[in-house]
Image (cartoon, rainbow, N blue to C red):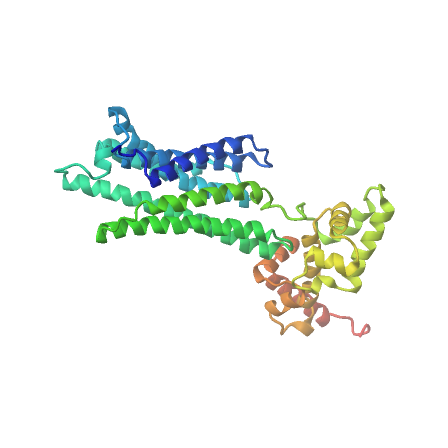
Length: 399
């Protein structure tokens, strides 16, 4: 009876290797708005294929080994495994940070892989030793290799956790600073990074179960990684391109410049543009829609009876800003009115920001300082001091 060379686990690994290489090639040919995320994800897929090749060569006893492969495979496997995790983190950062670029400091992510290579070289660790399959192994060497194995599981898990935290923070920031967020893309990315965290926890748990209870579940993590590989590729081509793109994405201008900018607006399609601006200003001045804490461009557009794309275009073309920052500029003006009036001196900053249409203290303080150069508390102190000084030195005849 012929002994099969490949079992089901090997077939999954072969599929993962082939899929990783195909996805890497496909991504290189795929047009993208940003090159860096594409390069990072391509390298990530290549590192996955290398680590899976290493798994096959290490654990499949029916694949013939040469002296060269027996020596080089530990280097290939360990370095690729320790590189794919930081590559995923950098990929996440590249699609969640608008101006993300690789810097020299990012070379620090190479340290775990370089350290592993140094350990393998120093202790002459080949495939048999890496499997802890050499009789009469020295206790020190056994401890070193065992520690190496755990580092191959713990370090990627730490990176995957960092990637998940990065997405969570990015999601929180967007909800505070943008009225229109691509929730689907964000949740996809968040669950995807959590999937890698779960896979890392599962892999580490399998090692502990095998150590303490000799339970043979070690191959199941390959199936989970295969599913995550497919999910990551789907995400990269369906959602990642639009993750950092909101319906408005232009530079901010101060509210007091709006009138001057409107006068300088081009005369092309001036009549429809002026009509839209009139409706926008009616929503601001008369309806005070900016006081609605959950206001987004669609809701605003529905209230004034203008398609949201026309609203976005008109605000951008006339005032040189986007919808969200346009609305927030009026919220800031509203808050300044409360802060500068002695009648409202007993109101807390939180009360004022809520009355002004904000729903986040951090977003309010960030915008306030950007527009005024000082914090709300400092503005209130100066405004009340000025008002009190003016009142004390007012001309009695005027009173």
